[in-house]
Image (cartoon, rainbow, N blue to C red; front, top):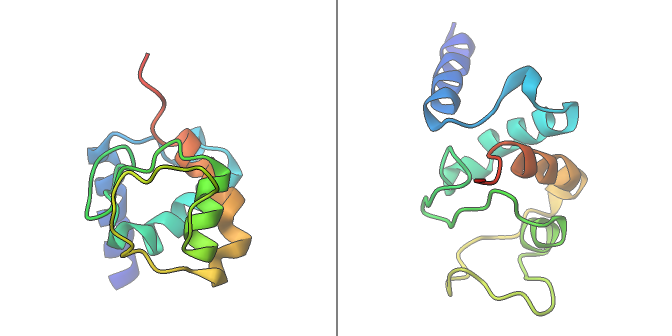
Length: 112
């Protein structure tokens, strides 16, 4: 029952945030969404295009995601949105980078 309650809250949070979820997302993005809501949401907004404790990260490049998540660094020449270095590296998520990139690309489409 506890798991069902958590899933319900997660579904409500995603719907309230206005992000795409479920079958609208590719399989890779759906896996990335799970990782995002298990790890990233601790600091980033439920809607990746909005500020949280961490900056908005929707539509971040794969290179940026890999550098920040796996190594705790920035790609060469990248100008950080914030000057803090609070985000730790998560080298255990190296195999999830493509899925996270897919989710962040698909979850909150660019404004037209």
